[in-house]
Length: 267
Image (tube, rainbow, N blue to C red):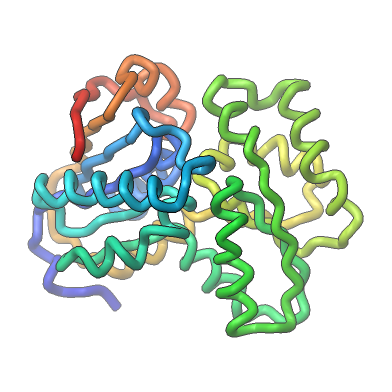
């Protein structure tokens, strides 16, 4: 199942995101890979990626991956759906180590299903890329896909407004039109969105199965890495801006306290 060359490789796994959202992925990796070490890079200086140009997204993503490579990581996880949409293949070509995105795992969960109706929620750029729909339709044309850009979800989460009337109002604004579409699945196509999971479940009266990348990717990587490390998770956090903000709000994504964050500059 796994790749045995990683069995005794104690180098950390590198993760990057435009900010805090990737911590919702790291949370599941800490459970799925309890003996692996991690380096997390939050590119808060360029947050959010979701409304940037394609060229800028690629530039920032390459800068993050190069930073992680300099830290001698054994693999890179692009814990950002927008970066995964535009930069995954470019980063993969630029690396000699494994690179994982957060889009493919959810797609693979959906593909075996027949005649299902799903909705993809994402940032403007992720939805504009049409990557989910293209990948699904190329292998399974029986699935009906709705793409919905939800750009205000990220600032709602960043400002701690989940579980509020404001969040309810914004969710209704974006999702009211698909409420009557008899959805089978809803994919949270942004790593910030799991913070709104309870709000979205409530909006659909728990009638729709909701997928997001953290638990699915965690399961995949637990099968990929044959860890034989004997230390518990050691995590180093780096940000390109606002370390105090990262510490203050990181807990709600990660469900554990972040003690120390180092401010860095990248390419």
